[in-house]
Image 1 (cartoon, helix red, strand yellow):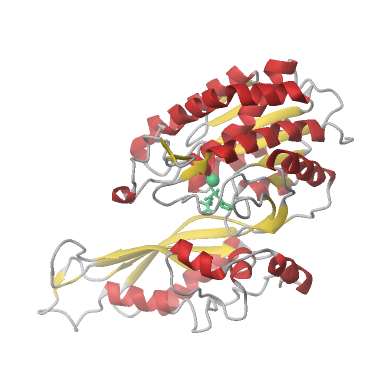
Image 2: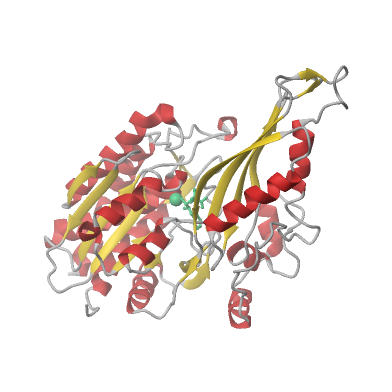
Length: 457
Ligand code: BES
Ligand code: ZN
């Protein structure tokens, strides 16, 4: 029976790639309000694909971008799996660094290059195609499925939580599945059992009413750019520790056992550095690179601008300076409390003569799952069969806000089954997704439904 599903996936692989190309042409950048209609087109594409796969599906309007909902619930007595993914993508900037334009998908060296290729259009698409293969060959699925594909993941998923809270019956399930993370490395598939949380904000520092001549006025009024640089510099000490009061209070320290597990994973620091084009790694003292990335909290500037940044010199004291900051959080840090602590800390650092405005964007908690559930076991088997090698268990440093909501509101754990690679340039120029990973991920998804059908509910 599964053989027919496999055959179908193989026979239709080329068409799937062609469809993914069409999907990737849609510039569904959720952060860009001028692309609202295009983002909606992304949702419509997904809805139509769900329908073609044999799911019942519809668009659900929100205060922001629509949610695509799909379901098939005729496997009586079998588990219900909720598949989450997102059709929105990050802004493609800096545009001049793309080898081929971000919304003109290009296939070269075994990869498809486009914004959203791995994050998350390509990965999410594997689950729609696996459903299609079951429905077209068997006329049914071995489990019940519910799909929730949103368009605001890259901007903090603000409207999704309300949808989940108001539609508990629609999203009731036994387990959630998300393919929006990475494999551990090429040839080493992984199941991710922990994610970092996040808090994101923007700080605007204002000085004089307008830009001033730096010779006439410089030295007599506080320069907002100089001032903001001092404030940002105060965020860390020289050991890489974040200086926001209370920042580490609720951090659950790594146990030796988990440190040993991380250390047992193959990790080539020299290759890591050369991949990223850096000459050294850095961060909190006394932690390894994997520990720093997966299990320690951070505070990073995401962008900082002030004054004249055009060609040639210009001698001014700028009127304003702005910075976007995000902190990655680990269990049990509280994003809301730390957002307030960050604002308070920055206010205390604010030099005299400047005023500060603080914009709180979004936040979510970090989490870690127990990895001994029957669903984890099912995922392990499916991945091993599809990828030809058993997955390793890893944590990841990125955030997927809805995972916390699935836990607290729907009461289920999430299987984070990433088919991408961290070297696929997600959020960066030349984002890509391996066609082989696309094929293997689709097969793993198809096998996962079969494996989960054996779980008693
Ligand atoms: N797919 C990523 C998250 C991710 C990437 C997890 C790689 C693990 C490994 C996701 O789309 C993402 O980028 N999320 C944002 C969330 C934020 C905007 C709330 C992130 O982590 O920055
Ligand atoms: Zn993503």
